[in-house]
Amino acid sequence: MMVEACRLVVLDRDGVINRDSVDFIRSPDAWVPLPRSIEAIARLTHSGFTVVVASNQSGIGRGLFTLDTLAAIHRRMTDAIDAAGGKLAGIFICPHAPDADCDCRKPRPGLMRQIEAAFRCSLVGRPVIGDSERDLRAAQAVGARAILVRTGNGLETEARLARDEALEVYDDLAAVADILCGEAS
Image (cartoon, rainbow, N blue to C red; front, top):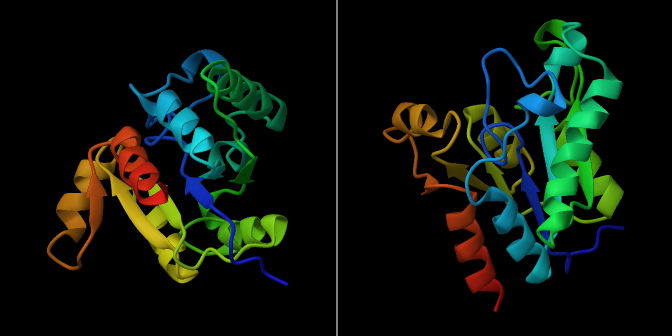
C-alpha cells in the first residue's frame, strides 16, 4: 500500500548537489559540492521533507571505480550534509553501463520505482530535481513533478528542451528549496 501523505524530494547527484565531471567523480576528493547545495538539503530536511538521491553511476559498470569507492564518495557527501544539519534518507544508484539495457538507468523509471517501494510512497506530484533530460524523463515516467536546475548540464538541457515543452526551471538547488519550503509552510 502506498502512503500518499509523504513529503519526499528526489535529487540527482552530479550537477545538482556537486560539480559534475565528464571524467566522472572517481574519488572522494573529486566530490565538490555546488555552492548552497548542502545548505539547501539542510533546509529541506528542517522543513520536514524526506530527501533522497537517485543517481546513474555508470562509472562502476565501466570499471572506472568500485562500489567501495562510491561508498566513500557518498560518505563524504553525507558527512557534509549531516554537518550542515541535513539528512539524506537514502541513496539509490544505477551501477550499470549505458549499454546494459537495465530498467534502473535514468531515463527509465526503475530508480524511481525503487524509491516508491522503499518509502511506500507514490512519487506522483512529488519533486524530482535534476540537471539533465534523463532526470526529467524518469520523473515524468512516474508522474512526478520534474524540476530542472541550471547547474551542471542544466543550461544545455534547458536550451534544448525549452522550445518543446513547459519546464519548471530554477537557477540551483537552493532556489528550488526556497520554493518547496515556501509551499510547505
